[in-house]
Length: 154
Image (cartoon, rainbow, N blue to C red):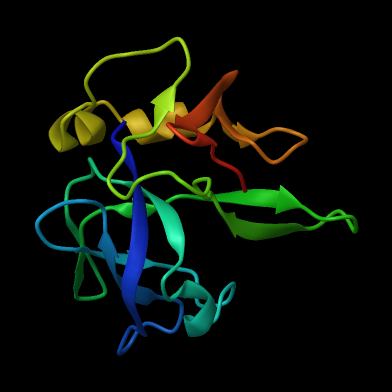
């Protein structure tokens, strides 16, 4: 997968969808990507603005209630003491560069194309193995979501 460090440069509530934010996220390309995220019930606009996030970039663009979304913000379900869960951003460490591609220790290769991700249902298959450990480090199987500045956490 092509997961990159990004920063939300603009965020607003979707005009008609109560659950969606619309964001412009800098992932190191010529222009920010427009992405829709169902995070309204989890974060305020102020908590979203300027936040550093991980973005799954090799998804085919899709319309979400009339808004063209070009990727997905990576979040994790984090257990709470009462047995419930909260939605938390998978956050790059300080020092990780905008646009930097996430690596997985011991693995290499080029990311799938958006068509391959969709056709092979890559996100569905790989998603089951994405989790956080007891220290909040994001992992795929036993491999940390890594950057040049260290692991990503939720």
